[in-house]
Image (cartoon, rainbow, N blue to C red; front, top):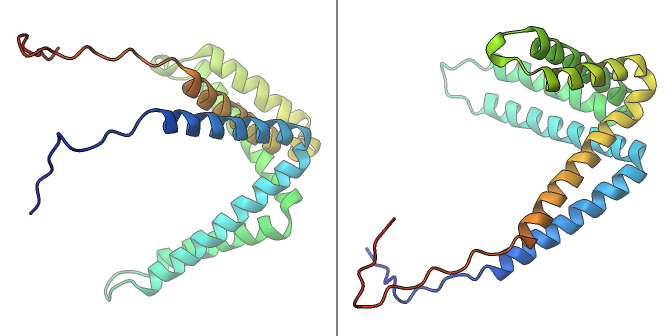
Length: 191
């Protein structure tokens, strides 16, 4: 067993972390702006990505069923694999139709969530967020076949912009001043 001498270990400076935050923030903001300019293309790319991830999940479930020890049921894993494979193949071979279907599902989920937030349990009531969700879900339902072409792309672009701005602000945030070191005459107190 080895011991670590803490007096000789080096501390990584904060500059590379700041540069990483600034760089990732700038890239995410740029991708979000490009995504807003090419919303239908971003929608199709997002649906294709989700389809490939679902196909990977199907392969994982098949291998999990195949490697299950004797006595453990394999049927649930194979059912999950079939559902994931069906959804993944549908998204890969028909991304526009899948985007329209996913948008309709998301619109109804927003409406239901908004109704719950406005009229539901008093402890979880949040009228402002519920109203925004109700309005957003209703607008998606009312403009439905067309909203399937832009809703997912706008959501992905907005998420990229939000993450990018958060990273930029985190990279530009001023550092806290260093704590003064205790002199040998003064004991170091932990606050």
